[in-house]
Image 1: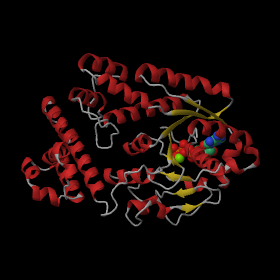
Image 2 (image 1 turned 45 degrees about the vertical axis):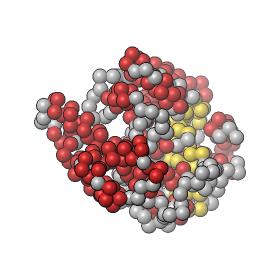
Image 3 (image 1 turned 30 degrees about the horizontal axis):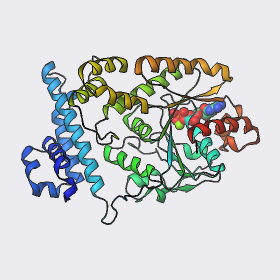
Image 4 (image 1 turned 90 degrees about the vertical axis):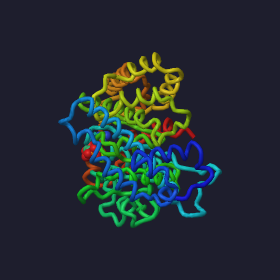
Length: 409
Ligand SMILES: Nc1ncnc2c1ncn2[C@@H]1O[C@H](COP(=O)(O)OP(=O)(O)OP(=O)(O)O)[C@@H](O)[C@H]1O
Ligand SMILES: [Mg+2]
């Protein structure tokens, strides 16, 4: 990897520190090694170190040893992600340096919610069709990698290309895997019919997220899987607008809250990570506190964000301001689907909002509810999108109100 003068100084120090963790301090000081470093070497080194330091592989050890190993593993993982990101950015062909002028990029709307079968994909499909009919150049992207079915809801029973072609490097860009649909939106379809489809590695996930954000479209509607796997959370967090779906059932709204919570923890966990938007100076105490409060390897002493805020206020100078800035910027919308009427949709939303305010110190805006539509079940069977049918006028009216909040331009 060639180093330009812009990568000297702090950037270079960080690069070398990451190499020291993943390889060795000697490697990090060797300019020849740094120049030959590539993605494959980084991946191999990570696998080797992960075997050595992953705390789950050393459950028999004394607690303090395990703690030290875990700390080390967190650093190794951060280093791996940082180096992957840097090398990936650098691998862009010559002459394709990022443009200084701001490119027009699409608004990415991700539809999530941890419960399966509540209507996320049908909503994503109908919203994409509605937006397309409103004149937005719309792409519907199926990123439910392990349970892809968005194409069916857009009337396509067979896909000639899918996101997997892009992930397996058979296609260079997402534009090459777009499929045209009869209802307006372009489609990035998914294919979950092979083992491991849902488990993509960090580098491929990063590549996919970047490519989605760079699509030549006005809006990209992303359909996500019904769980809280890291890939799902990362796709959700990388969108401009996150929509969390629930129904009125307790199992559904409790899982909607769980999804909002773990996505926030993931966001905080990565706040100073390589994908972070936050580029200000790093307060090491804040960094450690956030990591300890949100990491998933061991249970933390901190039970909620409100408690974390209290501790950050006591122990750091400007840390609370940074933390509050992140909390303020995290505003997933909530939608209630299959609601009997607008009144019955309110209690679950109010419960979610109350516990989010109390435990997570965040506000979650309510986007509205969608009625239970018998025609929707028919549409899921006949593969004719509901919003295109004559009886969908009230449903389309709800989509209109939601769109006005999601895309206020
Ligand atoms: N507004 C609605 N009214 C009536 N039925 C609905 C509505 N929305 C969704 N459904 C029903 O819910 C079923 C599941 O919908 P969908 O496949 O969109 O769920 P999902 O949340 O994407 O599930 P998964 O998490 O498994 O991907 C559909 O087959 C349909 O019958
Ligand atoms: Mg789905």
